[in-house]
Amino acid sequence: MPALKVLQLSDLHVLPHAGDTLLGVDTEYYFARILNEAFQSHGTFDLVLLTGDLGQDPTPDSYRRIAGHLRHYATPCLCLPGNHDDWPLMQRELNADALSCRKQWLFPDWQIIGLNSQKPGSPGGYLAGEELDFLDRTLAACTLPALLAMHHHCVASGSPWMDTMMIENGEELLRIAENYPQVKAITCGHVHQEIAQQQRTIQIVSAPASCFQFKPGATEFALDIKPPGYRVFELYADGSLKTACHRIAAEQPELRLDLNSY
Ligand SMILES: [Fe+2]
Image (tube, rainbow, N blue to C red; front, side):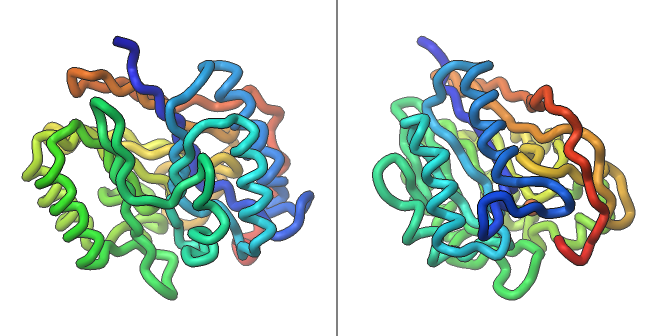
């Protein structure tokens, strides 16, 4: 039985107008390029999982341009909100045909559960009671192996400035997840770098951003020179999984250090 293949993209930061740049990077160009290179390198995917910060100061047109790039691949896409997203607008623009903002995606042998970790008015993360209740209820009702996904990170990344913005009640998430042996992995975005940790039986990972990267271990805002990247999951029917980050063979985006514009 072939594995279920999931492509995770995160932190697109697509801007209101095509051709605009953020920190010197044309974010939409790299989003389109990542998609293209991921499909070229890995063939088809069963799902594209987008873990937030799809838009930077998003407008309807930002999300429509994102939808246009995604629809080209005719693959189901699950869209989760990040701190820069407008969640009601996302749900209007990215919730038709192959694009979905639903919270549970069922395959015959696996389930993907997406949570909203937005903390209104803050760049940091938080899981409201209704998100945690949804997770608990969903896992109680369905024992399929589960991949949990959300924008913010639930464990420290090792970057003190970034860890001020992690999910502030991440321990509650882990407490619920550890109650259900079918939870195999938790993935996120937000950190613009790779996380790969193990918490008891649960793999905790992140995808790099599809635009600019943050420097691992930095104590304050600092960009990294690594190219944009993505994560691929191979989910097997016996509940095992393989996952790895990949980076595009890109010429280095010319980064412009300007915290105020991020
Ligand atoms: Fe981001």
